Image (cartoon, rainbow, N blue to C red):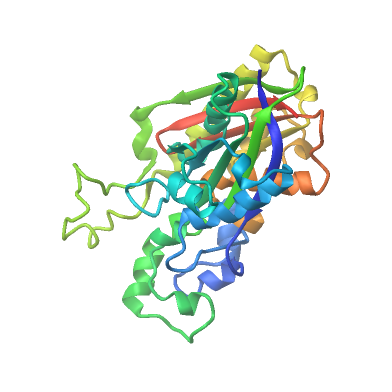
Length: 349
């Protein structure tokens, strides 16, 4: 028994924030951002809106797309690196908002590699008859660690300029800040007909490279209540860009190549390679490394930025609703995230 996709949904908050809008709060430029990342705009949640709120909206759409009601869901797998709280995780919170308290919720922390991991977990739940309909959600509210304070100026609700010190502080972190956006995506996964479903998976983790991208703040090394934490920006992501780029290209290419060999699939057999939308340059390098035709590696990072656990789901939902992803096709999902975690899966719809 293997799982396949029964329904999908996506949700982004508010109006898009363009690269030009970012120039109101830090020293950057549209050309600079596009050249390095491929991103043209992104979305940010309002203050007080959490990952479970965005996830709930995407989940409703996916459940309806599958022809189900919330009460038909047997298990939740919630993926995020930006939860509302250190604990509890957002899975149970979203379940309550959907009106299905009591449904078991798993919270995954594989960050940008979340979807390959979540699909393998969902497959196990269905295969063991623990669940029939599994709701997989990826949702992020990266707005919580953006390095500026004056959101009204950013959104065009107030006149600038911002305080020079705040402007300089945001500029210091622009390499990270321009990448991320907020959004959510959801899948309803259930058992597949004969000859369909999950065909294979290659998942990996390597904590030796955790500091390629991480947030120092925590409980033991740098406690949350440390008075100096904010002054030292320990709550903001630290990213070793060149090292992360190299790891992503090397590991994603290797895992996908191994997956194709193990499943007996060729590049021609796969209709779409749905890569995590972290950076257009990374995905282009992986595509070239594997020799995949450009049309088989769709991209939407220009419109959403990096929504971490949600990127693959947002892209999948767009392609399904456009009629480009159809029953009977084979798709490959691949992503690498903080941990480091990475993986690639193949599924016949």
